[in-house]
Length: 288
Image (cartoon, rainbow, N blue to C red; front, side, top):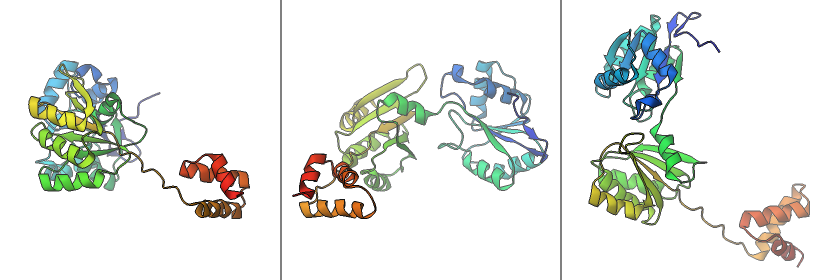
């Protein structure tokens, strides 16, 4: 299939391309990422030195102009990049690793480009969130990403207390300077026995994935003080068991379903599933 051009001929507007950069291993770079870097008019990079190292590793020559785009200058630089896009230039956004906008610079530019009617697309690639989730061994059918926890203890504990009953698997980014305190607060809020995984330096030479209860991970962090880029994956809370209603309430639940047109058999089955009871037990109560 022919790749769409970086400039949209119909609108005469440039196209913003979000580049998924390798987390650490340059071999994870996609062919499309290489092509975009080599042909785009302008590259906005979170760290221009990291980009230079990546392009050397990939043996790619960037033909367009390179500008920095990071937390400290994104508010000022966003209008400049939008103007370049409106003038018809193709702009690529690349961060130090993973997808832009995911706890990295990018959201502000994406929003501004969309508001200006500029096309936005992506050359998708590695993501620390889904990589850590897959390696954790924890349930991945339903999960939520919480990004970085608050830096100070009070707000961090408040956030974790609010998440303590979340049933989906949780994924956090954490700084090595705060991981000891973060794991201690996680163990306190979620319980020391909650399964979790500490994923460090993903795809890099010293990749490490520790799958242990939160209490053990907290003790490990105190003793070892792990360094590098850290992603924490924590199992969700167990769903509270449904309280068994009394016999009269069970009969009323079956009758309510029958009143909607369900057969008694189907009504009994639904009620037994809802409360984790044997179907025969509910049937006998209804006919008692």
